[in-house]
Image (cartoon, rainbow, N blue to C red):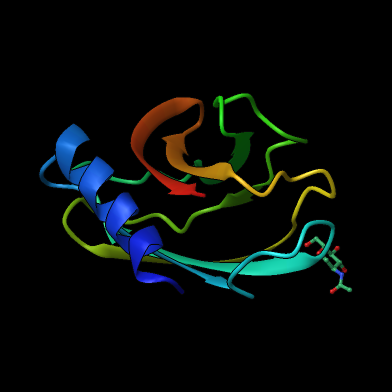
Length: 121
Ligand SMILES: *[C@@H]1O[C@H](CO)[C@@H](O)[C@H](O)[C@H]1NC(C)=O
C-alpha cells in the first residue's frame, strides 16, 4: 500500500465530512488490470449503516470517467460511530489505465452516506 494512496483517501474524506474515516487496503498493490484484488475497507461513519448497506467500488480514468462495471458488495449493519469492516474480492477492469481513480462509496439502498476517492498516477 503506498502512502500517497492512503493519504489521498483520508484527505478527501476529511474535506467532505470531518466525522467519516475510511481505511482502504488493496492487495496486490499496485492493482493488476484484469486480475482479482482484495479490498479491505473499514471505517467509522457518523450515520448508521442500515440493513441494506452496500459498498460500491468505482474505477475511473484520470478524467473521472468510469471504467468497467462498478463492483458492489453488502456491508454489515453498523451503528453510527462504530467501525464497519468489509473484505471484498473483485476483478480489476482489464482496461484500467495506468493513471486512475478509485471511488469507494457506502450507500444505504441507493442513498450515499460516505465516500472516499484515491488518485493513482
Ligand atoms: C475473482 O473474483 C470473482 C468475483 O469475486 C470470483 O467470482 C472469482 O472466483 C475470483 N477468481 C479467482 C481466480 O480467485
